[in-house]
Image 1 (cartoon, rainbow, N blue to C red):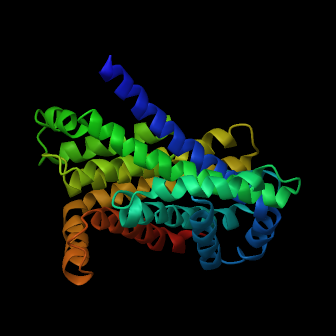
Image 2 (spheres, rainbow, N blue to C red):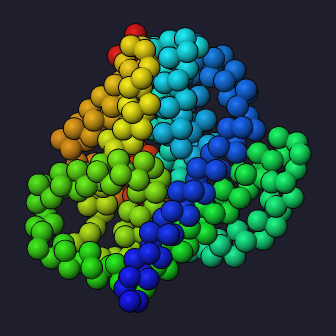
Image 3 (cartoon, one colour):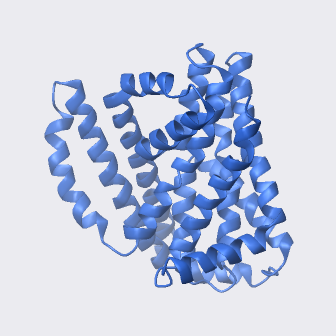
Length: 315
């Protein structure tokens, strides 16, 4: 019975995390919706500005899926061209890595839920405000609180279930040093992200597992999961484009091609790239005391490198 309760606690914690991210993103979009639209239109005149706009908006609303779906809908409505949309989509991949850095810095070391609950008291009167702007701010505050409460509960539930031992037991039958295993982790990362429809949630789980020092689940395996998440997150925009016009479908397909191509290229230089990131974080940045920084740095470097590689092919 206790195992069943722990499983539901784990799923419930993930649900709270996802719901918090959803209403936080929606609250911010409602508060700054018109401004976001005008910014997207004004700041996508060239490729570089499009990328920077995608980075900024996604870092702000904490959802690359929301950004790409918004962009696909703008292309469908004729508010953006296909060329403008590709730059923003590339930037969205970089902007979403901010979530990993926040979690790495404070997510598992500080009891954020202790601060999150008092924040609900601040957000409560705003939620019931008659003014839409204040209500949107209240939704953002509630979403922020739920997100980090879910993160804390997720870690507690995983500890209660001995997730680390379970994963170690499964990995004991897998040749962890094999390149085939790396590809397997990429596929798992893609499938899980497609299932939960949120790469940030999958990244939070990956960071949590990596922080447990599970035998057989090291930096390379966690990095492979992170790469798979880049593929899985493209499914949201693709589904949104199914009923759209040809240009909007092309924008969604460009997003998918961009992310899949980046993963394939990174796999060709995977081990040297991991060694370089590990050296940079440990020896140059002095982040040896927090191994989660390595994974966040890999996630960011991977997306920046992919953007720099393909940006110049945008017409």
